[in-house]
Structures are given as structure tokens and as C-alpha cells.
Length: 283
Image (cartoon, rainbow, N blue to C red):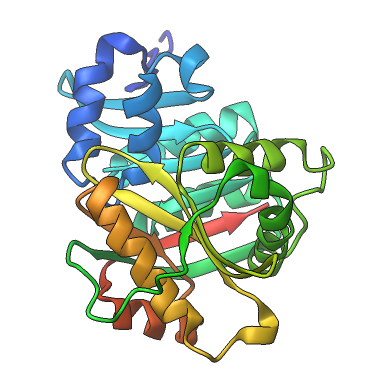
């Protein structure tokens, strides 16, 4: 008997699938803001997106997505979709620096990929996703403002310190920081880097890393270690949320490690509430 050829229900999408992909992403715009921001800005064509967007089809209909770039990110993926995404990721080998997304989907992906992808640098098994759509209940710090491009050299060391503290390696690893410097500069130019700078020293900083018409995501929250415990984070985050709601998007989100109790308490004081849980596997 000849073998039965099975066709995978996973396809690399292109701009013919843009409307369907956006419908899936925008159905949960807060949880999907990372992938949504890229698709809203660049479409689905891999050349413009700088990554592949895989689509899982069931009964001829696109139901789930997986972003495959520097990060591997499942979107609206049930167990069956995750199984096929994992097969595709395993067949092409690891090309990402992390797997990030809803804890159930990432757990299933990682269970399949672990034997062939090796030991990760870190696994963050529970990262609460938090969001707010309301003005902060605490007073914003009036000294927190958008960073100007001429202040790049002041802000950049704080960005490196935050990244190293959070991720565990320097952003200069590999390419000497070329890509990271470009990303920080892009955020400043786009008006999405915020800081309190006193006498040439960064006291507090945060960036809006992903933006869609419906949501944005805060990243890189950092307070100068010499000044921690003085509520700069609470009032600084209030300023960022206040301005983000006013001029960037109607919902502000972030995700945080479950073991970082001080940060979670700060975000709750500013009005954030848990809406889900992510997981990250970092290589």
C-alpha cells in the first residue's frame, strides 16, 4: 500500500491573508499587542514584516497564528494548532531567541521542542499580563516626559542596565549592541521613550514598545538603583500611563515576572489589573 501524503494545515501567510490575520489579532488586542503592532505596521508579507507569520487553517478557515521571528509567539492557538506549529518550528530548527505567549500554548510548544532545541538560558513560567484603560488613581510625576534624541547618550546606559538586570545578559552580546542601539533610537524618535532625568541622570524610565490602534505595551521600566524605594516608579508609571492613554492607545498593558512582587504592587497602585498569564522560554 502506498503511503498517504498528509498536507499540513500550517501555511506561511502573505498579504492576501491580512484581513483574516488582523481579525484574529484584534479580537484580543491587549494579549496580542506584540504581534498586532507588527502586522498593523508592516502587513503580513515576510519581506516587510521581517519575520514569517504562520497560519493554521481548520475547515478552510484561518483560526490561529504563530509569529516566527526573533521571538516565536503563538496567537489564539489551541492544542491542535500548537501541535502543528511545533512540528513546523522543529523541522526548521531554532531561529528565535525566545518563545513568548499565553502560558498554555507556550508550555505545549516547549514540551515538543525541548528535546531538539536544547537547554534554555531561562524559563519564566508565569508572567502575569496586566492592563488598564483608566486614568491612574495616583498623581503622575510631572518631571516624567518624552526623551529627546539629543538625550540618547543619557538614556542609553539606563536601557542597557535595565536589559541586563531583567534578561540576565547584556544587549551588546553578539553584535556589540548595534541592533539594541537602533531600537532605543527608534523608540526615542517615535516619541515612545519616557524618563525623568535630573541633572543629567536618569531617575526613572519606561518605553512603549508595541502599539496598535487598540492597545500599547509598556516595557523597560527601570528606576536608578540608588533611588529605589522612593515611589519614583509609582508616580513615573502613572505619568507614562496617563500620556499613553491620552495620545497613544485606549488600553495600556505590560507583563511582569510573577516573582517580582514590588513591581506587581507598583502596577496595581497605578491601576493595572491581571488579565492573563504569559510564559517565556529564553535562549
